[in-house]
Amino acid sequence: MTMKIHRVVDLSVVINSATQVYPGDPEPRFDPHSTIQRDGFNLLKVTMGSQTGTHVDAPYHFDESAAKLDELPLDRFIGTGVVVDARAAGARGRITWDYFEGVEKSLVPGAIVLLHTGWSAHYGSSEYFDNPYLDADACARLVALGVRTFGIDAINIDETPDDDHPGEGFPVHHLIADVSGVIGENLSNLESIDFVDPLISLLPIAFEAADGAPVRAVALQIEA
Image (cartoon, rainbow, N blue to C red; front, side, top):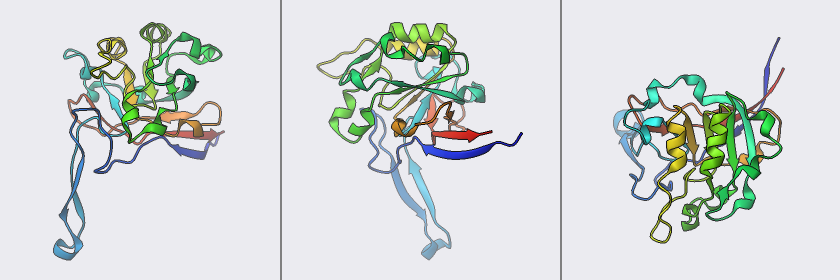
């Protein structure tokens, strides 16, 4: 059987010196290290945090005893996407189990749940930190169904705390870490996945012993 990639949808934000980061994280810097004029070739010096731009979290991010990025099986980062329309949640809205009605049959081991909040439209603004977030009870149900990989088009799958919103201690991060799961954050362009059974790739840079790494996230439409 011959398979053909009919379409590739980019789900990633661009990383540059203006890339928005989680409050307190290192800001990315791109500095010329070598130039064609001086050295005969171009080479960038890149400085950034492990969770810059579109990235994945390893369980180690919130659990010292849990798996680091390079200890996870690669199939944790590739699977059939289940896009969940959570755009109605709004600012600091909780994505409860109600949002999963209609896709329950697709919530199986190996699936990658993609929470389409529409919040990527606020990327680059202060509103981006008022993101919708996954309800802990809904997360526990997804984990019980065997889901191990989650993505969201926002900066955080949990509520992002600030002075007015202390948050709840990142319960979803802990629930997913407890089962050696993976979280993808700062996804973008989820509305362009308008075909069934997209193959999602969240393969990260092969950082050793890391809490996470940037990814070039894509959705593939494959024809048999």
